[in-house]
Length: 479
Image (cartoon, rainbow, N blue to C red; front, top):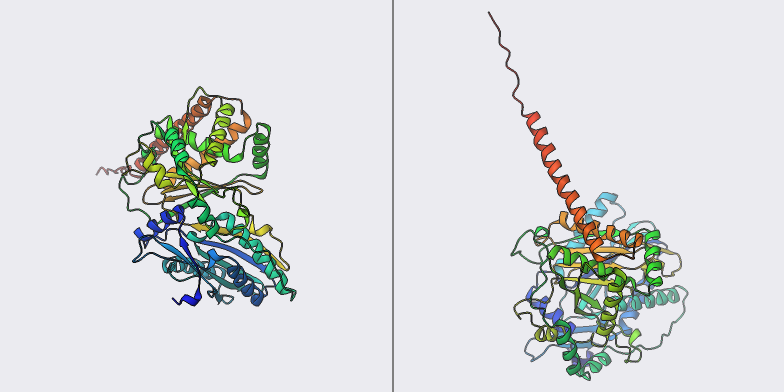
């Protein structure tokens, strides 16, 4: 690289260091490679589309960043001045709908396989695929090292603002946002001594990983990160509004409600009253001016420890859980590797195996205003180093998406858990003033019904098999 093309050099955040370690340790795993897809309907100004994206890249140092580690004591990120964004164009108008779908899946797989050269910015690329006269498939591929969901929201709003201005032959001048290096500088000023006291106290007495249920699993020693499965449940608008109303009435957040249900499920299926899972926090410090407009990676994954007692009243228990989350916010910048070292869990064992992500910062792309275009069928594909990830997205309808390692977990077991999750939501809405043991009993009943159903299904299968295998009667003829 030429020095004249370098704008800045600085170290990585702890979260970036952890992600980089996982990427380098499993280079074929597609880890932290993200793809966002959507369908564009209407008249698209392709030239304005390309220029708008390049202007967004030019605005934010994180989108012009590369990572270098070889021959260095610690990795650094290098901001380049004006790297050219790659936008690929394809015309599939002559293909049938089935052929287009097959071609799209092939493209996504090939795109993941290519990945990114972390030393060559920008660590993102775009594809614009025309499938009809006024229809396009748009694919945005990016490395998670350079941004998070909050940043995605910023980028999309800016892109549409630039696109609109370009379509109208106007210039748009946005206020400069703070560079990501200011956050790195802020991190270096933090004193971890108080954080150490907090996390040691929080995790005191917790000594082993919360075991995910054995009957969920396929293999005790799986070949990790080869293939991932996804299952989703979309709550109705009515159910989502009822949840919001319940949360407001009892001064709770929807995040707390979801965390409580997940903790209850982990407790039931692990057989442990004391459980720990990972929770993803925004990580944006309110004491850093202008932090809400910075594009970069701020999120952090922290251990959430929950005690589950059947005698506890649900609403009181949820309020305690919410206070616990609030107390964590003061120390959400703490590197997970440090927390691991301060805990009583052996260093050879992770603190948790599953993580919960509650998305409130990501705006719906389809709701953003843009002239002459309608956007729908928005979806994202993300690869993580955790074997089980529950992502909850709050929109008009609450969406529950679970991603899991196909070499670790049975798809039928995951489907059952998602179904029970939804039933627990409905049960809480019907009777919020209840004890946890009532919800635990409900899970017991559902499990018993399923086991009975399985026994009946096996019995009917055997009976039907015997019927089809009945020997034909032999006709005897008497001479």
